[in-house]
Length: 320
Ligand SMILES: CC(C)(COP(=O)(O)OP(=O)(O)OC[C@H]1O[C@@H](n2cnc3c(N)ncnc32)[C@H](O)[C@@H]1OP(=O)(O)O)[C@@H](O)C(=O)NCCC(=O)NCCS
Image (cartoon, rainbow, N blue to C red; front, side):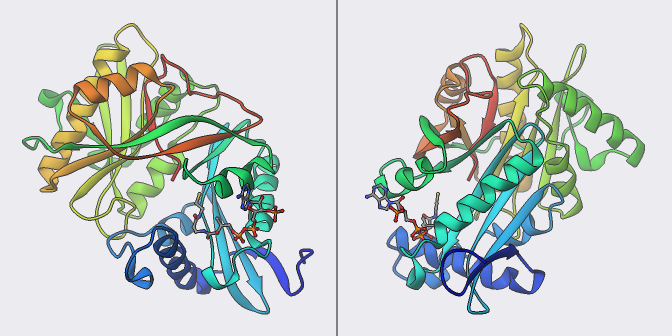
């Protein structure tokens, strides 16, 4: 039971996931001034995919037995983020959001997450103020960027990349171990294998495995389709990383190209990818490769920890 009368914060029950998805639509649609908030974002789903992901914890704010809001907390090994966080518009400004942020922060403590944060609206003093109360500091902007798809390629030796879903089960284990090694080079303990596994298991998209002379050079976890987080006509790079090496800049450009060609192969017209502006090399390379910023928000980091937000980290993510 929280300090607010009639409010409890509990693990989100499967039966409440549709209601959570509906509050997500309504809360963001209302905040962003959509004409029909109840039907906002009909082309994507943040609730079901995350609820069914083993590396994500989902919490419900229950008020008098009904769902008032929810928060999803994702673990990428030593790093993690929370979101989406939503409270039903009729129940906002009564402390429910704070109770959910407190629960997410306790979850990071329980997991031992060393680098934790969130992405929020940079222009909103209310949002930044809310998260600051819990020790999250506003740092660099994250640009959510788009680029056109390129003539398709299915992936294979000639293309320099492979699709994770094309691998046999035994090869998948080897590939996951290689992905862990690559992520480890930018942040000790950074582990995306849960995200790769659930993307494949739930058929939310595809992971691109980029080959290099010494093995795996990098990978990109891409979402597409209405059950995913991508949005219509879009291949969304949820996370991508390149092994720290002298060839990293060139490898990053090859990985962007592979994602654009996967998009072409899927028949969608654009690639969507978020990059934190502290990652100067990655941001500049994306601009040079034709990406343009669609909108931007701010990354807030617990205890001001920079994590993998530094000029030479070739990482794409947006923590939405
Ligand atoms: C953001 C959201 C989850 C907050 O939930 P909520 O239940 O309304 O928030 P709470 O009542 O618990 O907390 C309000 C806090 O916001 C902060 N706040 C509000 N206005 C503020 C301002 N002008 N300046 C600084 N801080 C402010 C304060 O910390 C306040 O806490 P206080 O009352 O102790 O001062 C909710 O408004 C929502 O669902 N919005 C739409 C979706 C969304 O934007 N989600 C978050 C995306 S990152």
